[in-house]
Amino acid sequence: MKVAAVLHISDSLKPDDLDFRGLFLPNEIASRLKSVRGLDAVFMAAPSDYRGKPFSEGPTVTISQNTDVEFWKGFFKETEYDHAVKIGADSPFLDPAIIGEMLNVHLKYMPEYTYSENVPSGFCGEIISRELIESVPESNPNDEKKPLPLSQVIKTNIHQFDVEIYYAHPDVRDRRLSFRSGSPRDRRVMENIYDGLGKFPGYAEIAEVLAARPEVIHVAPSYVEVELTGRCGLDCVFCYRKTLRAPHGDMDIEVFRKIVRDMDDFTLPYALCLGGSGEPLMHGSFYEAMETAFDSELLTTVVVETNGLLADANFAGFIAGRGAGKGRVIVNINGKDGETYRALHGEDHFERVVANVELLRKELPGPEQLYVQIMKINETEKYLDAFYDFWDKKGVPIILQKQNTYMGRTQDRRYSDLSPLERIPCWHLQRDLYILHDGTVAFCKQDVDGLSGRGNVKDAPLGELFGRGRADFIDNYRGKLSAAPDCASCDEWYTFNL
Image 1 (cartoon, rainbow, N blue to C red):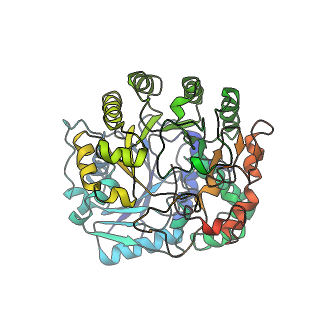
Image 2: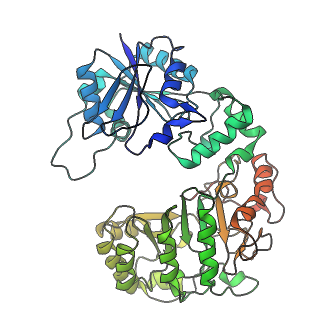
Image 3: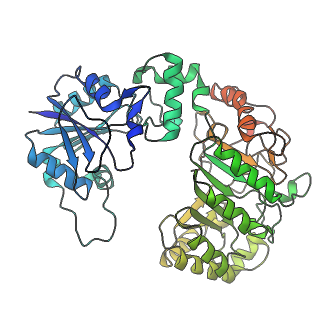
């Protein structure tokens, strides 16, 4: 029974992604794998246009096939190995002890495929058998859809294969972390950990490392929600706007431009949401703001949360053209017809919003470009099935939204509470920024009046303002909850954005 490790370089990786603190990662990983019993060889698999450093620890194979499945079919056909351990070549923290345990499990039970659900990417790999590859059908060359990677083919059809799931302590899935240097954010986190320890940590100690120094993962905002305006043409029963201490107006366009410039200073990719208490399309400089956002190379996604009233043909054409690849639209519509729409939104604009969504669907055919969003509350529960059927026929995916009562500001209309029994560190304090119409950087999205704000973007760089929240994040990570705002009364701590 012969086993090879394959250090896989994906098309998206750049040569610099394979260097970490002066080490060429494929050689470093191959060196660590020498301690794993049962491994007979280590390969590096690189795209045909790879121009990075040479691999000195074993042979290199070329990824020239069109799909992942075809590559593995070719690999097993052209080599003598019965099993392959696929490892991301950009995995500085790869733990050979984990690989050894996974391989022992795999060779003991002989499944077709072994992977881990709880060990973060970068610490482990996946094990593929020759038997599995021989049973997976060839890709259909006439299929217009992009072929899925082998791992997704298996996981989406998991009952058709013999799969073994490997588990290891500690379970850090609730931290939602990954450890791959091809991701700039992951790299920044790993550099912080490595520099603090002076070594590469084993997986068994990662939870202790994070508990001792949680600041290593508080590196930069990944999701910034900006309240472009506090004005709105609807009066929804679940909206918190009426509870604000004072009405929120329009953000100065220069303040918005400064937000985007300051975010670029973090030098990490991020997503921007135009949301808050108002309807962003009512802002007089909405399209100027969008132009500014689309011009940022680091901004990967621009989400517009809208009630859909102004999402007309002009908006649809703009998003499809100027925002191609970055624009994402979420239309909030909580009725299934005019009557139910009026009951929740104050007026009957159902047909108008539906027509606008249909326009958007034509202009934005991509699967992740357009969504309709309905809140999961008592009033909508009775017609959720009809709502799904209605939009499914129109080809528009649906987001089922959890109600946020903003710590009791609005009436709790939920018919079920899905809060986990055990509290985990708040994702929003780790990676989100919420910026009010006047430039105030709020404590979090629950601080809708900005009473516990970090300061104003007009007076200080966002890097400094984000840093002011680090102590609160560390306290929260360790279970010490803020009193102002009252984090103990919040149930948004387990939710997360992009």
